[in-house]
Length: 311
Image (cartoon, rainbow, N blue to C red; front, side, top):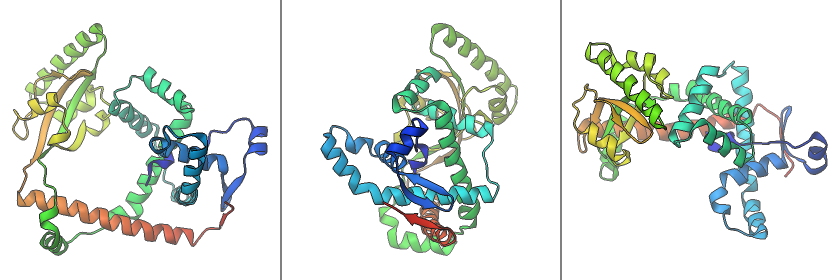
């Protein structure tokens, strides 16, 4: 699944579309337009197009036309298949995904909306594309990822052949409780909330339960799960706190510049350990099999639909 599903066509008036646009591909009853294709390319290739003259930009985009059109066709086909299988996305999951994006880039809601406007689309249009990406991810999980099996024999064989080239950076599996704050007033309020939940944790209430009830982070519905994070990828203020914890322990509230956090260390991966090596290899093999299976899956889906390229 690629990031191209995030941005597609934002049509002007209907009459302008008819006059200026044209169909570049037909996928069953759906069409892909020239403006949809170019809007996608301009978004995905923004870094490569920066600073180019209009003539150079046009030439560069022309180079990528066919590849991006094929990806858009694959996206259309997968969305249609997901619809057939009744795969959807709840408002709760969509809101959580949008919140995670805001948190990732450290944007307030106002800043986020301004960023969307600058890119040329509304919140509703953006939500639609994020929803599509979630649906595609669910489709892949259901039809492909859930059926992938990696055996111990495959792991051992991979280690034997590629063991010396595997990156085994130290890392941590984390959960957190988060109270965002910007102004001094919000900071004081966030500190009070963090102090309150610390009392609950100290009294024996489970970390995950407290997260779901009180955390204001976008991942609260997932129990504050931050997943596995490599040591070099952690901000200094987080690393300082985490290195003082044992597995299963949680920190005191600390300030990150964006709010107050309480971190729980769920697990630790040490460089060079056999368990870490096997986990790493298992992930590598799953990704390799996923890539191959996805290619075969898309080929199968394509064989069942009418596709006409007009580019």
